[in-house]
Image 1: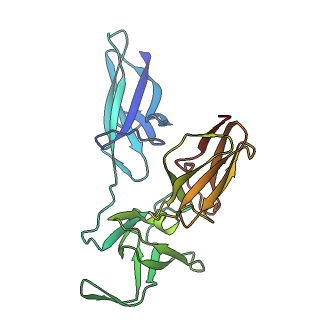
Image 2: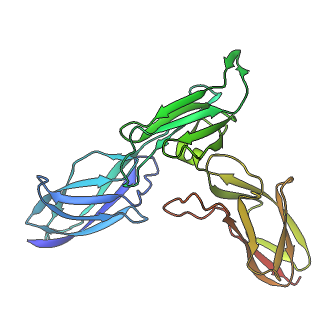
Image 3: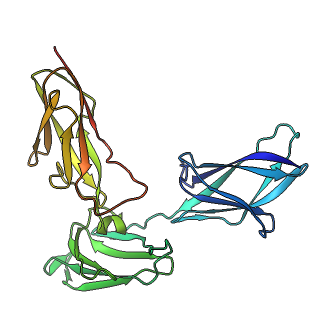
Length: 303
């Protein structure tokens, strides 16, 4: 019996076969009675093991887990023992990511998503209350009344509700009844419910995109659009993000919320960055992801 290097690659079921990051992989005996080892996939969806293999091969049972992703389990891998040439003990495992449902009505957006408790387990039966902030109105000839809708998560912690696009609702969640959050539904077929209830800034779109090169003493006006996780466009994001420059002597800036622009003002020759950070840190997202589209790299030349 020898010890063989085994490579496991986890990918999703999309045409791009994107790597599944942070998934747990466990290796057991073929009958599942003995656990050998376990590990977590890296940014490439890869996890490696060193497993004993008898000649010519040994069969192991493989189990994988990632919240919101389903795998066909159990799966079996056959680890070939050296010196059988060529020996490449590499295996691909495909996970199916839950695809959010789309609304059948173009006036509606499906808000759906998962909820977990403090132990990481699925939060079953949590009640979420939605109260419309709009007055009674007519939509395609039907009366929409101002009322309360209550939904509950299922045994998997999953909840789903149809909401009118562009409408505002007050939301309260069981266990946090003293906190009311006002949401604005995006004009799109679906949205992740946790992102809708707990929005945060996720991206900055710049027109034209960086990097920027300016001559000392000149300025350049750039279109800017700050985007939130609930699908809302926030303009320059005044109050939601904080702007700063790494070197005021090289480049400064002026924001125009109405025009949704940022004007770069070149000072002395050099290089600097305009950095954009979230001001609201009450919502923590893990793994941590910085705001896309920033910082703004600026080169200032003498002429």
